[in-house]
Amino acid sequence: MIAAYIDEIIMFCAGLWMTSVGFGYLPYPGKPASRPPLVRHFKWMGPLLLAIAIVLAAAS
Image (cartoon, rainbow, N blue to C red; front, top):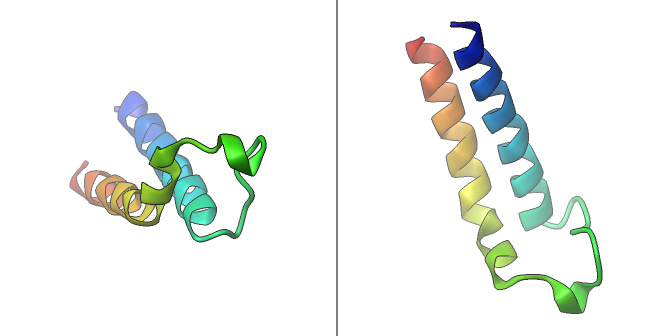
């Protein structure tokens, strides 16, 4: 049970980071030219990960 809460907290924090990087509130570490193409998808992947973490927290 505690492991599930820890997992949801990690998912929530990762979703916050992905959302912040995707919308430009935080810079992506490294040079902008070396940014992987996956980073442009952070705008929708971050909020999706936040929603999944919240639903899992409510279900447990």
